[in-house]
Image 1 (cartoon, one colour):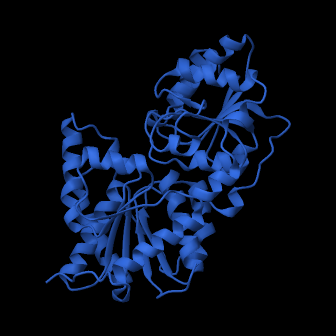
Image 2 (image 1 turned 180 degrees about the vertical axis):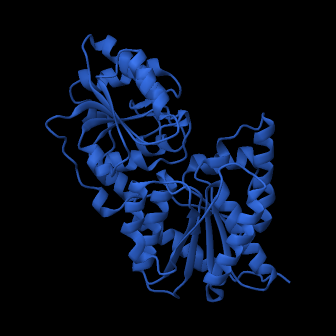
Image 3 (image 1 turned 90 degrees about the vertical axis):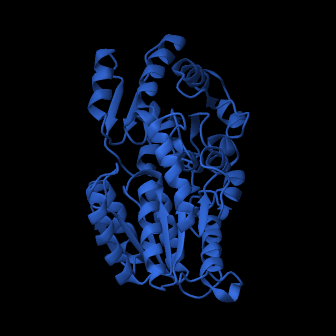
Length: 389
């Protein structure tokens, strides 16, 4: 990455879990190594020991520090106090770039950045949805409110970053054609993520890795597992790895169906450790943008079985036999059974690692994001931002 004017970059997001957190960690590391000063502002009430260990990994790259404030998932009156407290903290850091991730992070970054601009402080305001508000339906009252708020916030946005074509197209369909600068920059994983991870001798047949909430489809995984056993006529084994608000409900579901001894549950852990526990990774999400778990699984040489949602077909291929109809446990079970019963299924179905690496690399992602930052901040690049009067 070529040396350019050092920037002070602050990433704002709500919950330090899942794909958004992974995305930000990669940008932090790449941009810090390129000589820029980086900080993070996120929620103080979510995350656990696993997330704390991930913060420890990137703390050496956070020259602007880690700032944590209470940020609720839903809109509430407490947001006013949070916004004022956040603005003061952001102002003290003197950022050149405020990059909001997810709905709440986008609100905080753009409103705080706009307040700074009113005070004649030059700062770039960027927003990446990562799915989030784009999962809402225009047919519901809550969806109409959220999507109209997205439209309104374009007036306070210098650039929208879309992490896949699906997200860009969904934004245009639900929110409207963007009235500000946009850029399509795919999520990417690092060089160390493109190393095959062999399975352990006590590996199970299937793993689910992710948040334990219905949007991600753990209940579909349980249903499909039972149906796969019936299709193959023999008992199988699986693991669900992750944390989330519905963990106990999924455990009860497995016990009620007599699967408690064949599907184990483990807390969130580093994906490299999780991937050693099975060859076959199931991603049964009902909705996604561009999930990192698919990229990480392919980089590790795993067999992916995933819902045809979000940007997943852009990775696996639009006509991939590994894609199943979202919300359909029968279709999911059919493909799960095929992976175990069809010789050579992985080699014929999975994209080649070099093809994935050419498009979905964190180095490429960080380079393109940084180029956009400079276009917005650096007058010498011919993209000077107007300063509010």
